[in-house]
Each structure stands twice: as C-alpha cells, then as structure tokens.
Image: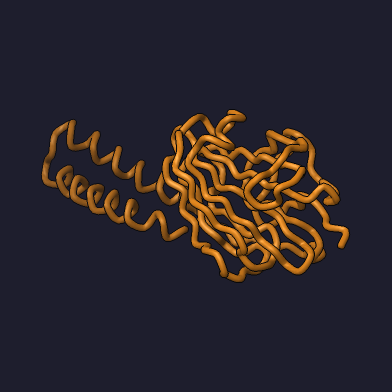
Length: 214
C-alpha cells in the first residue's frame, strides 16, 4: 500500500472500530449503517492505494509506461517547456479503478521540474493537458531525454510527486501518485519508435511505450 493512503486508512479504521463497538453494546440501525460505511471505506482505501511490485526486463533503450491506464492520445505536437520543438505525445488516462502509483519511464536525472496550478477539468479532455493542475518533469540520460506530466483531473485534485530537479532515478522507480481519476502524458523525441496503439491498456513499470534508437 502506498504511504499516501496511511492517514485515510488510520482515520477510517478508527471510526470503524468505534462504531463496531457501538453495535456490540446495542447501537441502533444508524450506528449499524455507519459501521458498514466505515468498514467499506477501510477496504476501498486499501484497494485504491494498492502498490503492487512491478519489474521489467526490457532493454535499457525502451521507455516503459509511467502509469496504469488506457492510451487516449497519440499524435505529434509542439512542446515549449523542455524540448522546445516538435515531439510525439502519448496520453494515458487513469480511471479510479487503476493503480495510481506512477513510475519513472526511463533512468536518468531530473533536469527540469515545474509545478503548475490550474483547473480541474475531466482528465480525459484534451484541454486538461495544458490547463489542469500538474507537475512537469524532464528526464535526461546521456543523449536520451523525455518529458512527462502528472495531471490532476475533475476528481483527482492532488498530485503527489517525490521528484525535484537534480534527483537521479532508475527506470521503474516509484516517483509519486495522483489521487483518483487522472492522466499522465509523455512527450518523446521524434526519432522514438512508438510501441503502443490508441486505446491500448498499459501497466506502469511493465508496458513498453517506445524505443530510443541511440
């Protein structure tokens, strides 16, 4: 379980135990209903903040998915923060049922980091990529570089990122999470060969998104 869920789990568990005791000493229907609700919230919190182990045996020049979800965007666009040129974009939508822990798509050093305040549009809308609250992270490893964004959604109003400029990370390392439905966008050099298709399901730390030819 991811540490971001510990506080909520503790609060719900304490409430569940208190109301369970209330039922045991003869509490009425309302107490019984609240007991059921809090035990449901305990189980939901454990499920939502689950953090399964993931490994990849892919070659080092492969880019792995930073998030669980569905590929909803694949196109070329201009990127002005990091590359300042034309790039390939891969947008991954994370539903509330997906694992929400994000992982590093490549090994390298964080050479660009920016937090952007913004709106909370639905994460599957195109405008969410530029207007919503997000963290923007540029990674470099020699001649290889990419940019990715953790983007908040209508329900997900908190982006949690452990990275800052200067941090060195390994591929597949946990780098944070986004709470509830949200998205992660990847911006890749034009010479990267994409390995995913539109509407394909991907898994953080395992699925191959693309391949560098450097």
